[in-house]
Length: 255
Picture 1 (cartoon, rainbow, N blue to C red):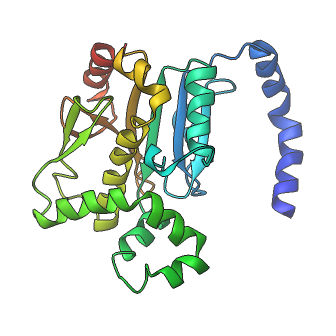
Picture 2: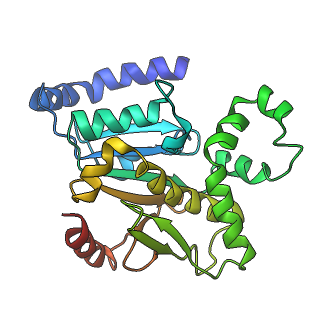
């Protein structure tokens, strides 16, 4: 806590004035461009690696960057994530939703371990909110990953996109650069796009191309950021070589 308090004092001496100036500019009329879902991992600082600023994004964080499927909610029982989707995309008319996973994700490591029946037993879920959260809301990601594992990791997976009729194909780590848990993390990231599209209050916007869903993946060891390219059917490293191609894809499909 001492480090936090000293950080606040440093902020007061360095960044505070600039931030207040930015608050004045956006004031009561912020125009955020994206709802950004990512993991609560302390190594993930999305506003830094996207160079976004005050008023640019709604950021929602949890263990494993998971957006539960709408089937889990009846009546008024819900969680923060769909509420954030409504606040961002309906109330504030934000047009882009981004889900960002990352390497060495502790939640994904735990999800992989939940394949063990004893580890994922009801008894263990009752003493571990994290295991219960993952068992309830990330089991679809694990099932999708198991499909991939059964084929030797070289066959594509198919995900529903904005509608049930619209689908996209994904090759997961075709160059075999990442470990098993990282492959699962990438599958989980794409599964969340399918989960987002399950919400009825987003249906018309998705069908009319007024709302777009994207996936990013961050390698914490190299600092590289990957964008899932539906055109290339895989996560593509965003760099000086690929940026023009990716920008053209975004303008073509998501403008």
